[in-house]
Structure formats: C-alpha cells, structure tokens
Length: 184
Image (cartoon, rainbow, N blue to C red; front, side, top):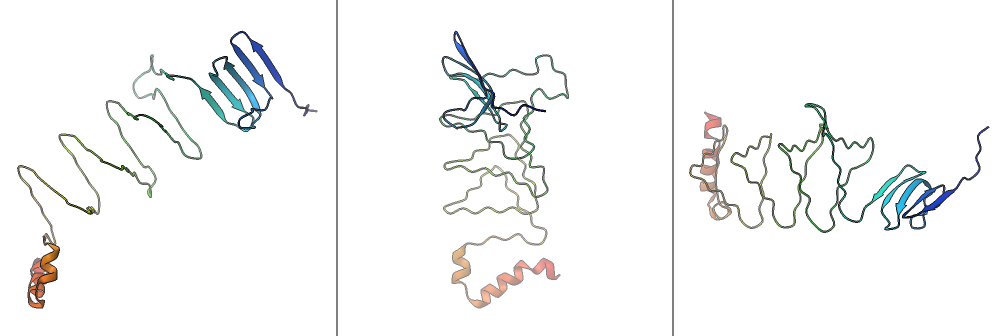
C-alpha cells in the first residue's frame, strides 16, 4: 500500500538550498524538486508538472558540439499548447544559415505585425500564392529599372477620381475595354 502522507524535504547548504514537498510562497504551488542558490538562481519542478529556471544574467545553452548532419542539435516541442518567446526590453534575433517559418497545418498562417515598419532586404524576393491583396491608407510606391505587369484576363489601372467623374458612356467604354480580350 502506497504511503499518501505529505513528505517535505528542505536542506540548507552553504550557498544553496534543496527543497521538495514544500509550498512555494509566490505561486502557492507544491515543489516536487528545486535547487536555488543564495542569489535566487536555480531551477524547480512543481508537482503539477511545471518547470522553472531562473538566472540573473545570460542563460547560455550549447548543443550539437559533436553533432552530425541531418540530426537536430536542439528541439523544442510542445505536444499541446503554445510556445511563447518574449523579450521585455530588447531585441529577438534569429540567426542561422537558413531560417524558415512554416505553418504546417492546411489552415495555418504566418502573421507578422509591427507598429512601425516591416523591412525585407534581399537580392531576390519571391512571393507566390493564389491571391495577393495590398491595401495602403496613405500611399503605395513601386520603383525599379524595369517594371512588368501582366494579367491573363485583365490588367487595368485607374484612379478613383476617373471612375467617379466619368460619364455613363465612358464607364461603359471602360468596361468594354476591360473585358475585350475575354469577349473575343
């Protein structure tokens, strides 16, 4: 028969403390196993399955020193739930030979949101998809040494003023011009 009594362990050593079965004062969670230094650095596992690690400056993780090609040096996997990487006062830099962002689900998406600017800088930029929508509330500029636009069914340009100011006849002629290749 298993012993279901509460078991607590606390041992203070010079420079660090080891805990088990005690209740954490801040979160109220029961510690499964924890080691903390006198400078409040360390790690803990709680009985409800959480893991916390605290370091006062840089946390440095080195993997793959003796790795081989085609074998990942680091994997972070969440079976359920989200993964959040947050930097409260600084930058997040992803650096590598190649960087890929992939939404693997058929209904997945990749969203980039910025309050100031999104900048793409590469010698070749390719966009491929079924529909491309660009909406600007102020202005849109395109510049290049050579610019080609092609539309298999239709390739048209207009300003909003033209369509509002034109007569019914000019609107009909514009419509006929738009669909001329389709009607032929």
